[in-house]
Image 1 (cartoon, one colour):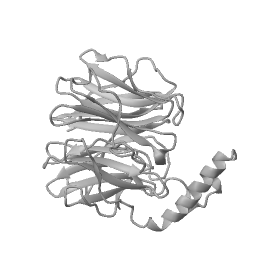
Image 2: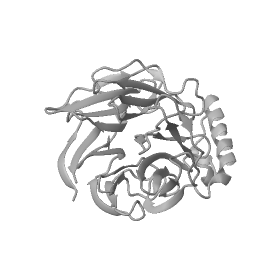
Image 3: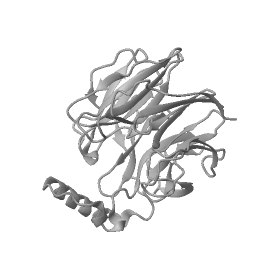
Image 4: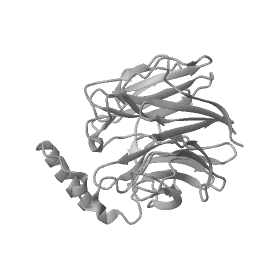
Length: 349
């Protein structure tokens, strides 16, 4: 049922030394927008946000969308029901303290508003979508999948009932069996930061294994169905985790593992018109394990069971942080290609 329509790399000529964390948005005029961050190296001050548009001839030259003297991260494209497009992205040298900024377009991405902070003065570690796209529920509410990397990694959903103008947070979502790690993780994270500031950074191997960076869950990806709202979560526990809400996203259950491996790298999914869920992921069950292969899996029972459909890349290298969306019977997918380019795929279902 999954038929390949096209496949290519977005950039004919690489414009930065490295790039990562793409987001994809198909438009009603048949064009497609793709954004990502790029620069000399992740975390460096020259890392900026870029946007490219695909038309009938292919992808045009990337446009610089945001750049300051701080690292930029994780752009997310989202189109509101009325057609307004919103670009979200993070800014900050420390992930645990980054801020969320946004730009908007009312003309399918041709022109954009000036940069604005999504939640002015926020110090909680970044509001709005952390990496994957928001969704609009049947009742009109917008949910943005968010997370915090401070001590134990945890998630929440940012909620907007006024079209994305204001936001409120859901409860904090933790992975089952990890709550006891929180204080220890915060202690070791602070100790590592102090060593770095003193010019004597600690080797991560000095940390006790249970307190090494990356425990918990982050970067949810969302869907809604007749049973409620659900999310799959990236985890440092060897498996993808899941959480569910029965009240339109106000509260969420403790995240629990599903039998799909996760290498503590990004995942994303889309729900097709027939109810099938398509998941893009690296099928590696080791925290910070290999980011190859990158694969697609499907679930036809609301995420209870998953069937691997195909591998998209299998050679050595990094193929990671997929973004996947669907529009009618078409599926659009992007991901990081060896940190040098962004891979783009179109399928029909």
